[in-house]
Image (cartoon, rainbow, N blue to C red; front, side, top):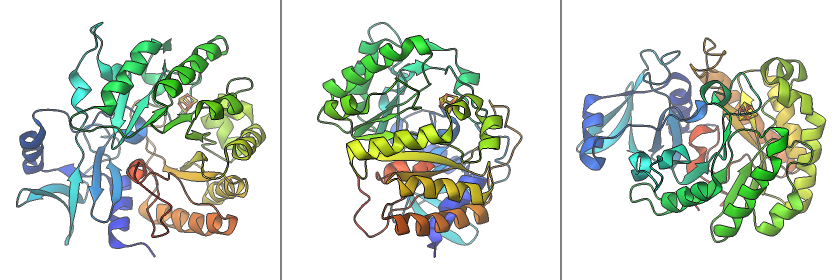
Length: 365
Ligand code: SF4
């Protein structure tokens, strides 16, 4: 059974939230004039909120998702100087996470740090490749940005800045971003080497497509990678060909084979995989969850959020009932396989369909 705050998170993810003028004013009093969100990616387009009981949510707002956030039933407001989420007769204490202090700061070359690094909740994410060599229809990267490689030392510096940020200090790092074209594999491996060596005392995760000869799991393990995220995204091969043709060409068997090998080398709890909820039938999503969990991988349920910048802008996100069902049935599946839903990091649950439980497995970095 889901608790009321967990149900609220699900409804915020699917219907969005409005921000009252008082909440905007309070945010400005606390942190100065700044955007409410970096809105840098389809699933981080909203405001990051921590509801009481450590239920973290990235709630879409109409500023960035006018395609489906229309008259949301919940509002972020202020009572006695504190943020609350009001939904009907329910009122839940909340913390609104600010964008990092470095969002408008520049490096010595005059470039914005934000062009290299984005912090959400407690994680700094760098994207060595802007844009992507592939074009999945649910992902805005290739539609929004031109493909280019970023300077390695500027990436490293941006992580350093994010870790010591005054407003939102990052506690761990994710290297993700677009998939490299064939002749840029070496560049990406140089980034992995540089970041993992430079920040050996900080958990650094890598999220990437398992293209043949791209990632050397043994080497990444030696360098101290914390976790790998190898996202299958979809399990239905016909829909995968329609929505993510290049990733589908790799083939689900290759994904699962790589994941199995990664679990073998890195050990349990160090490999996760995102699977979208809402683009394929529930039975396909659950079959994907099972295929991952059986291999010792943590499935991460990622509710589909249509980005206005993609060809899927006119689709609606999955409804609350569907999300609740997929969550609860997925929990049953992973329990039988002796694994957990990811991510393990509680603040990183903000844009996923996951909740901390009382097992002690989930934690803060
Ligand atoms: S491969 Fe990854 S980054 Fe590239 S378009 Fe697909 S989801 Fe986006």
